[in-house]
Image 1 (cartoon, one colour):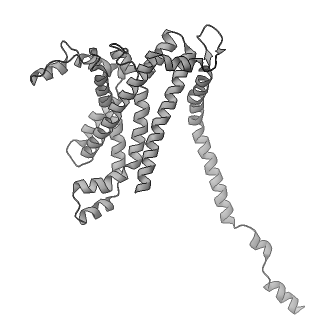
Image 2 (cartoon, one colour; image 1 turned 90 degrees about the vertical axis):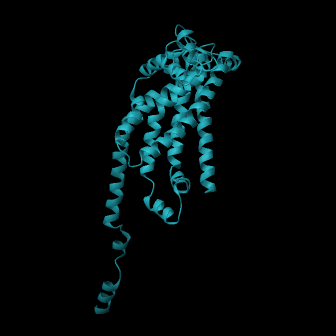
Length: 318
């Protein structure tokens, strides 16, 4: 009796060891509760995206294969809209103008925004005031911005030609000349969108590790070397985010064109969204306009995929 009792006391309690610890179960329950809370908090945003972005995208894709014009039921016509679209001279011009506008706006705006952010990240007087001044155009209605620039770029009494005259330069027709109209719109787009990019770069600059900067300076690096070897690599995610948002904004430019030039002169500023607007609401060709919208979505995806590939290739090289 004594030996058996001692063996039972010495034997481990397997039922107790097989049971998970109470702390682990509490931790897993807390994680599940946090996940549920996260889904609840995300639900309004997900619902908004599903209703106002996802559903219109699916409907536009479906309507792109139909002949639909408001007053009759959609009629399935297959790829006829796409075939007509690629043969349409107005569509070709609008795509070309949109690409040129994007190539003029995105890299220039990103470069200027980075320079401004670097300057406003230094301890200078009235730094907060300068930041607000650069951001004001972003929160200003595009119609108001376009109206002001219509006065500035007026070929007869505009401020821009008055400034050119001070330096003895000939006046320009700006928005009324097919050779300069798109470039003038790009200049306005760069000015208006500069504040958003600047704020993103400022936030990214705040995240650069000061220890790395100090170590580079102790090693004898000058300002350019510190920027190129420490600051620039740290801004990689900010570069990609600014690039993606800039591409999307440039491809979707519409109100600026509508107020200033309405696609003219001679279709020199006819961009893709303006062409979609004309086909959808002036000509009531909703199926054709939906096909153009699907094409624009695919074109934006191609540009973003190219930027993502470049970012990954640079990160792999580093």
